[in-house]
Length: 196
Image (cartoon, rainbow, N blue to C red):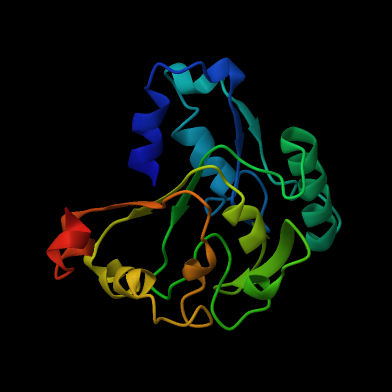
């Protein structure tokens, strides 16, 4: 996502009216190399017009991930209002295992339906993530998918018979059409009508 965020940050948009939130975050400090907040600060908000956006990082300085999730949910409700809170645009990645945000297969986070933010675990780290209902409430959802390693996961995401337990990214079903931006390596072998 770094290259996409860097290019987006160069776009001349009314950034002073844009609130940027994270779909998920690892339970690490803001300067940790694996922090999504650090990635955004170094890309989208590093220079150019995007630096004028208002960034709301996940509070990873709380005593526990659960308290961080509760604080982030309060912020989400404050900024977006409504139940569910509706974000204007959600940019999501797709993991090789079929996860998106921190909704990993075989974990409890994809099953949460009564919260907008929850805790989770992925690749050995505690995480805070928006839930599937919060992601589905977005006005527009875009998946960014790149690399041959994502080819199988992308095929599963597009397969209507694929179980959400194995590919939690399939839980993201907003009312509007989902846009998938995939590079040639990820899209190789997909039916022509899907790749056009």
